[in-house]
Image (tube, rainbow over all chains, first blue to last red; front, side, top):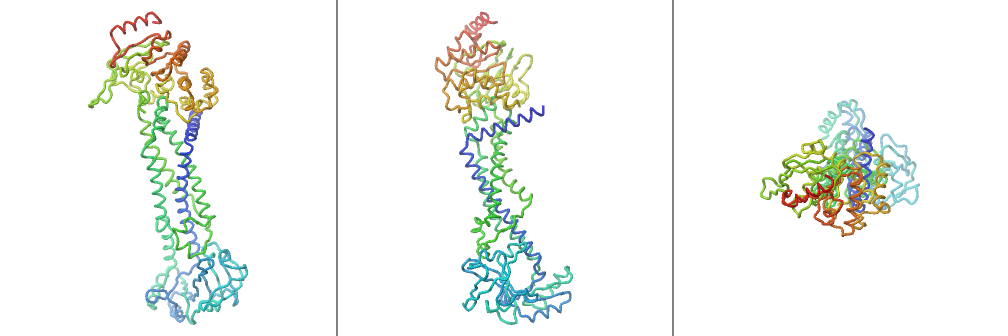
Amino acid sequence: MMLRWIRRQLNLLDFALFSLRRRKARNLALVLVYTLVVFWLGSVIFFSRAMQNQAGKLLKDSPEILVQRLCAGRHELIPLEYLDQIRAIRGVQQARERLWGYYYDPGSQANYTIMVEASQGSGLEPGWIMVGSGVLRSFAAKDQESLTFRSYRGDFLRLRVKEVFSSDSELLTSDLILMEQGDFKKLFGFPEGFATDLVVEVRNPKERSTVAEKIAQSLPDTRPILRDEILRTYQALFDWRGGMALMLLISAVLAFLILAWDKATGLSADEKKEIGILKATGWETGDVMLLKALEGMVLSLSAFLCGTLFAYLHVFHFSWILMAPALRGWAVLYPRFPLDPSFGPGDLAVLFFLTVAPYTVATMVPCWKAATTDPDRVMRGQI
Amino acid sequence: MIRLVEVSKVFHQGRPNETVALDNISITLQRGLVTVFRGPSGSGKTTLLSLIGCMARPSSGRIWLGEREITSLPERFLTELRRRTFGFVFQQVFLISGLTVLENVLLPAHPLGLRWSEMRRKASQLLNRYNIQGKAGQKVEWLSGGEAQRVAIARALINDPPIIIADEPTAHLDSGLSREFMNTIAALKQEGKTVLIASHDPIVCDSPFVDRVVQMRDGRILETGEQLKEAETCLGKNL
């Protein structure tokens, strides 16, 4: 009995494949459009998940509290004497200055982050730099041994690459250049006695917000930023249900809805006729529904697998090149960087249920309507 | 034996376009005979065959298939009966285009859950029998009218049903092909199949292989001279 049931399902699957082969051009076009939609949805989901993970890794080692000075609502250089006032606040374990800035390289049309770790020191001698693994890839460098910068005066500063470093986060290392303090000041004309911002470490993590409040009170022209706040902002920015990703997602879902609507609004005369013939030759309504479900599944699973694979390649191997115009800000400001493949079964499940499930339902409704009509309409030639 | 007792079929009941397709029909059809329902268009022949073939239910009355009353059976059982007991040859042939001859013949066999090899063997036998084995892999839209008709017959027989129902089977065939069709029917009769045909084609109605001609008009079986003729035919032949 069980064997017969299995054979029956196999026979129906067999027939579903025969059936699909008949409308080869139409079905291929359908799979193509469907694949494109899955590809786009998948790209958005993979990209946002990877960005979230990258941001998480990036911020894991970032300072607990950053103190920036504001002037007329804009970020200004902060005087080094502020450090003493911050160190005097109870609970502060350590406070130090940071020098950093952005350097735009016209050759690669990208911004690079230049950083000096003044207090800890990077062990760099003047004239030497350390670069992130992505910098040499994108910086308009003639060789791999030195990089030439154009200083604020317009003269050229050639710095030799001491070391290429990498980290868990490509987002961090792709555009990062570490240099010695003197070179940094030469490059940007940075004034003495100032820093870009201050880094504060707190003994007890629970006191972070209290310390931040005290800093804001004692130094009213500063803005303390907590790591958790930045993390929340990044999570919201790169969440696929929010921000730019949501806009991309909506466009893909709309395209998909048009596709599903087209299927749901009715069957072709040929399809209706075929269902009538099947019913008249002894197929049950359930058989016809199963056949149509199998046809839909073959189409949607093929499109799902192809779309997901292409989305994976697009995001993780081709640096989400097609999404760059939509994410113009990030794409131009940062050099292109590969994202680490980081998505879970949950993301695949979301993609599956956003694409395969609605399509299958959309195709089943008109089939059910056709399959429940009396087979005698075939006898009377009314199909 | 098929028995219809006071069977009526009304379409669009209670609406302005209500149509009485069959009006209080009672008839008994013997096993193993070829019965032709003859009458003009709209006389109710096709509706009668679709009720007997479990494709629709009567508005009133009862239909018996052997000892089993089938009118009140749930849809699932009707489908099962349709699949195993009846083979249908439709007026417009109704093959599924894009599929091959073999795939069309196998259509009614798919839900049975038979082995593929067994299904194929049965189909090959039928295609051989109707001399279309050479076209098994060909798409049905390339077949001639006669070939398509033979494919439809092979499809009707794939599940080896005891009753064959044919609705205006020669409507789209020329005289030669119509006679060929009747020869096929004769062979089926020889095998003990019950054949029910709706037709007003003289080649069918006057065929020597036909055991009984039931004259119909306006949804009724005529009670005039034609019925006597029917009775004579029946008496003179197999009844």
